[in-house]
Image (cartoon, rainbow, N blue to C red; front, top):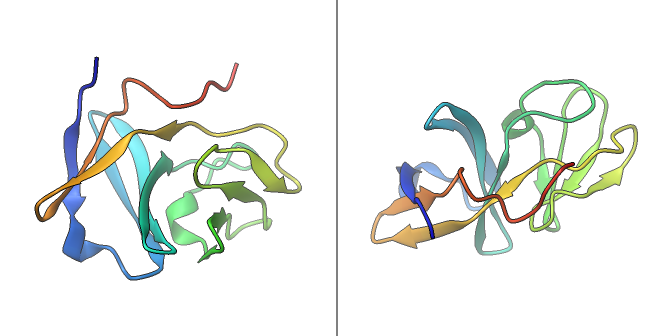
Length: 110
């Protein structure tokens, strides 16, 4: 079962980059990288700052504060100091809108 909700207009996303939004009370970074749209929890697991303010490159997002990097498809940290994954969410583009399901993460962080 899915529970997609509108996160933002597709036009709000840069060709490579992220925007921070709140979907049903959950902070989400909606990210476009390498032509794909992703949704990842917008809080770094290391320092609790917004990932959407960091750089996006090669399918990863980098936390602006300490440089932790996270894979956009799995939420797995790929660069220290973070060692704990962040949730990634199902995302789809419906016409001009980006929809995200924050209630059914694609990974678990337990």
